Structures are given as structure tokens and as C-alpha cells.
Length: 205
Image (cartoon, rainbow, N blue to C red; front, side, top):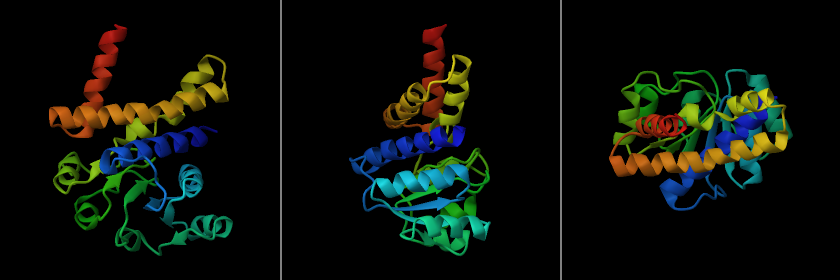
């Protein structure tokens, strides 16, 4: 089930973002909003609780949210996405549909970090600059949610969960490198991620 590794990768990416934003990868005591608690979101919630974070969730499917709350009573359920965004979040983890980060949601966001498992989180390319202008650290979705891709690649070589898990944990190191490069070159993290990918391809080539 690739959601296990996707959630692990997002968790590792979030730790790297926390280290970059606050100087410490520890998420204990941080308020984290998880938007969408399908397979990936649900597993991410479990990682966050193990790490000592405070978690608030929302999901368009009220049953899915209730199920997570039943299993983990410490998890708070926000009745809507607006209610979730209105919370004094440290981190927002979009794990539902893509395109949820739009002009309106970014304008009200309190989170210092956006790091989640959804694909194509930004409603349009200008959102990344809006996030940067507001001092919000954006972990590029295709970097942190690559855990599932890691699994597919690993299966081609005969699947080993331990090896795939170790690779998903490398997402911490990769995300950290991307933020450092973004700072050094004065570019958004997604641009840094592309540059890092180009460098790697050049090395392989």
C-alpha cells in the first residue's frame, strides 16, 4: 500500500520544514491541520500523534473524519475547511484534492509551513510567491509525496519494505537541501527543487 510510504515521506518533509523554519525538526506541541483524512491523511495523523503534535482535521466526508476521531480521541475535528484554516496552525498539511491553496485560503492562513500529500496543491503558479511574501514555507508537494513513487520504483527491483522505507526517509534530507538551496539562491522552493533535479540528472548523465 503506497499510502504508507507517501505518509512517511510527507512526515519526513514536514520535519525538514520544521527544522528550517524553527531550527528544530521536532513537531511535539505544534498544531498541525490535516485537510483530508483518506489513506495518506489518516496515516499522517498517526505519525504526527506519535511525534507529540496536536492535530486538527477536516474532511468533506464527515464519516472519514469521525472515524479518525474515534480511533484517536485527541484529534480535533474542524467542521469545515474554513474552520480549519481559522485555527492558529503551525503547519497546514493538504492531503485532499489538488488546487486547494488559492488566493483566499493563503490570505487567511496562519501556518508557517505548508506540507502535505495532495498533488498540485497550488491553484495557480502565482500562489507560491504569495506564500513566500507571507513568510510561509512551502514544501513542494511532488518532493514530499514521492514516497509512493519510491515504492513503485522499488517494486521494479523486487519490493523490500525496509529499503523503500529508508528511501522515503531520505525525503527529509532532500527537502532540507531544497530549502537551503532556495535560501542561497533567493528562489522559491519549487524552483530549487527543479534545479536540484537538473543537477542530479546531469550527474547521472
